Length: 526
Image 1 (cartoon, one colour):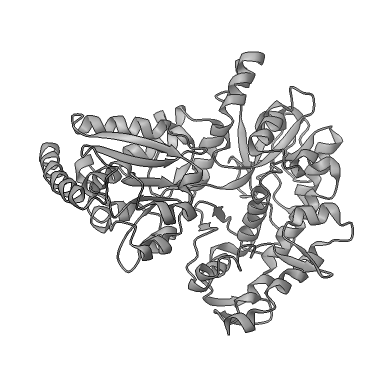
Image 2 (cartoon, one colour; image 1 turned 180 degrees about the vertical axis):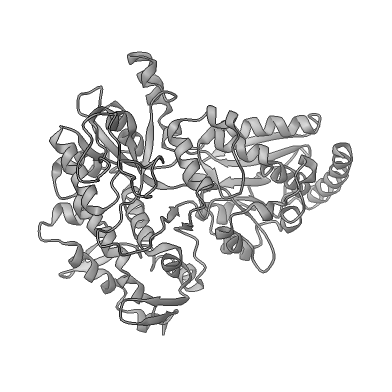
């Protein structure tokens, strides 16, 4: 079967290469047996991709080669909108792409056939389409056609230091009324209400969350740090709280502008003419209350979290080194891939202070969004993925689309989905199971995140997958849809800064002002 595929590929490639050479449209692609793969070189690195490339080349008896081209800024959606036709890359693995725009431009190769055909060459009975999470399948299926596949699933969460929590007993006791005083004591059932799971002892309600912050300060531990250079980290986490309160359906109205919603005084049908009403979703007010509780005391957060010099890497370093510096920090707001980015700090600490400080031996977990004390909001935990527009795609003008198709199918075999997850600790939006061997090579944090994203069947929504044509076509207008507000004629777009700098600012005031920036809706859209 593999030899037959090789023969077909060889014939197709020779024809397409000759044709493209004649018209000069792909003059940079001068090797018909080399597949040029553009890789967004950020936190995920290229270790997994190099491993996958070796495996694929071996399957083809090294007749074809893969050249990985690592770039970052050059692979932004706005840059590729201009450069994709002249780049030598045949396909891309990108952290973000405006999917519909690139379809409209004709830049994306139709991959429907390879997505809807069984992966039988890898001993599998499912198609790639059947593996895609239902939450994203409809987005990528454009009128029964696929032009790209979802890439990574990133989540912005509160990461907590399990070792530090163990040392200071920062867990609620079984009654939930106070904290354990020794490790042998039974912990509360945590946010999920189930004993013996990853969140035992963690705050289940807003009141408990506030208790935890006060307890940490009391014991000389600073609760939080985060990057000051990239404020969208903390704002994305805040959006996660909004999502968790509203649930998948309620939040997705903000992406599709279509459906019924009850604001408490009757159901309203949301559409393009009145979508501004979504600024009054109570989940936003609850998220603002969470932000205000963190900003309630300067001792609850690192001052570096509001300096532009504090990059995400600096924040990771501050967090990881804090115990060695006798300035312990319990939590950081970060993206799923943070451990991979912090590898250098882990390695340095391991050399300087011993193996217990290595990435393999330190333990971190995810602190779920606490629920309101009154039980309002969605009962089920809902996760928000910030990488909904990250894609795997093939450039339509490539003379080697057949070769690229073959590699894309390989990347979506169960074996390579597992390899990606094992290397990066980041999930993909596909149904696959890690083996005991995979899990044994992963850190505590990545195993916990795998449990949340792949095993618990929790609803997942995507922050930036805009099904609404109105949103897509007015991107700048909706850029700060989440937290854009006006209070006393002053605009704000970051609740954390507003609560920090304005003593009179309250969650209710911030919430009441959310509609103000969209007061021109009628003149603009009606």
